[in-house]
Image (cartoon, rainbow, N blue to C red; front, top):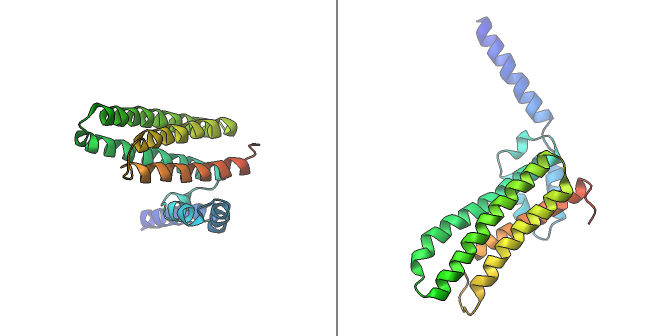
Length: 177
């Protein structure tokens, strides 16, 4: 019986500790209201199961960076799935450029995360910005001489919106731009 009580008490302490030290929902909502697409921001952050467990804004930043990296990785999966749809050299070249840019974007988001852990937030915004630019270059390449919407537009737009959240957070963490 004592073991059962100890486990219950331990669980209760962990639960209370995680709830009392969680980053407040209203602060997430206020942060999102500073972005151009508050609804997107709130959907991304308030629906992420990690948010209720993090106590600091820098922890929220790591989550947003990981969401950004996930968007890019999902785009890479899509690139692989559509690669066979392209037959002429120009289209193959365009999709290969996207593949390279997406690989660079993942690397840049990894570096942004590393700098977040070091609390070097100016570098975070630089590397996250580079990642966003890499994804944007892919979009620019795909829209050349096309009438249809490129297949990676949604991923590219989401990365840009997530970058905006990163930008707002780094400003709150003291980065002057």
